Structures are given as structure tokens and as C-alpha cells.
Amino acid sequence: MLLAVVAGVGLFVVTGALEPFRNYQLATVAAYLCATAGLTVLTGLNGQLSLGHGALMATGAYTVALTQNALADAGRPGGGYLLLSLALGVVVTVAAGAVIGAAAARLRGPYLAGVTLAVAVVVPALTTTFRGVLNSEQGLPVHLAPAPEALGPYFPYERWQAWIAVAGALLTLVLLANLTRSRFGRNLRAVRDDEVAARLAGIHVGRTQVLAFVVSAGCAGLGGGLLAVLAQSVSPGAFSLTLSLYLLMAIVIGGLGSLAGALWGALLLVALPAATHMITDLVDPPPAVAQRLDGNLSLAIFGVTLVVVMIAAPGGVQGLLRRAGRSVGARWRVPTGR
Image: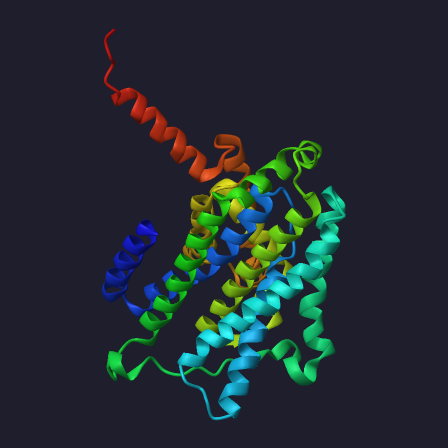
């Protein structure tokens, strides 16, 4: 909690010095961090492979959009109702995660990956099936109130968005950090390491796996809701299967099983598109080649980064930093005499 308070104060100061676009990027990192932290608990600590977290983020995003639009139609678009919309997005995603988790708890390995992959494909397709409500591929706008009047008439809206997203990310990290250090967190690791031994120790394996999926889904729903607030619109293209693959690769590159690794992964998810655009601008390919590279170059760079990290640092970025810290500590440790 103390670390979260210090980080919150530091980010509060930093947002005042950043330009609007950088504040928007910071807010995007915070939104992705909610999803990567939840996926870290599910995959890194419990051993369940999920390829459908992009769909869970879409569930939270569409819930926030529908709730905010309904409030606007009712003449209540106030900022205080945004918390209600985000909370409702988490609740709906938790319910979806409970259903998926109940089915996933009976499956292992590629079968589990196949079920979550089906979710990643089916959920965006529902926008076409229910086009009267979800507006198909065009998506939905998200009606939002301006920043509170107490902050002043010229307060940058991007800074207000950054505050909301950072607050959501810090709350998620505090809850997950306490959860992973509790008895439930030890149960998660026990089930991941050996289900038979965990069952003999009195741990209900199926219930633990379902709860892990529920917790992870709630975090993904909050992340998706925050992305809807930042973009002020939602569409199925923003939550495609590629996003689910990016989330999974991000936690592996950052450091599987570590909440700090989830932070590195979230930073990479935002830095990758910027690096891709920079490379495209430097190379300046022909229009036909640029059109082919659009979307594929990011995935290729992500894949190459994953391969390099797995060869050079199997523990991810956080594992590499941890080993470097131990090496420096051992070098500067004062030898004790007998």
C-alpha cells in the first residue's frame, strides 16, 4: 500500500509535466497493465493458458459504453457515474469469466487454449449478430463528461484520463499483490506446480482454477473499460485475436509470474506501435508495401522480441533485472570474518 501511494503521488506530479499525448500514452499503459496483471495471475501463477483475454477486455469495454450511453440518454452523464460504469463492466466480465472458467477448469493444455481461442473469435462476432445494440463493425461512441469543474475550465482532459487509468491500475496491483501473497496465492502456485499434490494437501483444484479465471477476467474487464474511456469509442477491431496474442506475449517477455513483469509487458504494448511507426517512417516503403506491413510488422517485431528474450533471458525482463540485482549485491557485499 505504501508503495502504491508513493507511486500515485509520483505519477500525479509527472502527469503535470507531460504533454497531452504522453499523458494519453501513460493512461494506455495503465489500462493495459490491468489486463496483463490479471493474465499474470492466471497464466503465470496458476498455469492456465488463455488466448481470449482480448475478448474479456471487449466485454468490459462494451459494458462501459452501453452504460455511459444509457446514462447520457437519461440526462445523467456526470463524471460520478463513470465509476458505476467501470464497476458494472468489471461485474459483467467477472460473470463471463466464471462461465468460461467453469468450462476451462475441466480442460488442460491445448484443449484449454482452444476454448479460450474460441472465446476470442466468438465475442467480437457477437457485435455483428446483435448489430442493433452493438452497431456491428462501426462500434459505439462512449459519452463522457468533461473533467470536474473544480480542476479549472482549461484543465487538460488527457491528464484527467491519466489520473483515472493510473488509479485503476494501482488499485488492481494493490489487490493482486495482497491476493498473491495470501493463502489463495499459495494455492494458485500449488495447483500450477502439481495438481495431484495440491489435491492431496486438501486444495480444491477446480474451485481454485475457476477463481483464478474470475479474478483475471475482472482485471481484463477493468482494462477494457479504461481503454473505452480513453478512446471514447469501442469497436470489435480494437479487441481482435491479435490483442489476445499480444497480451500473452507481453507477460512472457516482461516476466511470467511477476506483477512487475506485467508492468514491463504493458509498457511494451504501448511502445511497440510507436517503434513500428518510427521504423516505417525511416524506411519509407512504397504504398503497397506499407499497406502489407501495417499490422503485420508489429506482430513480427513482437515475435522476434519474444524469441530473443526467451534465449537471452528465460525469466523475462524482470528475471534479468532480478539476476542483475543479485549479481551487484553479491559484488558489493562486505565479507564477514570468523
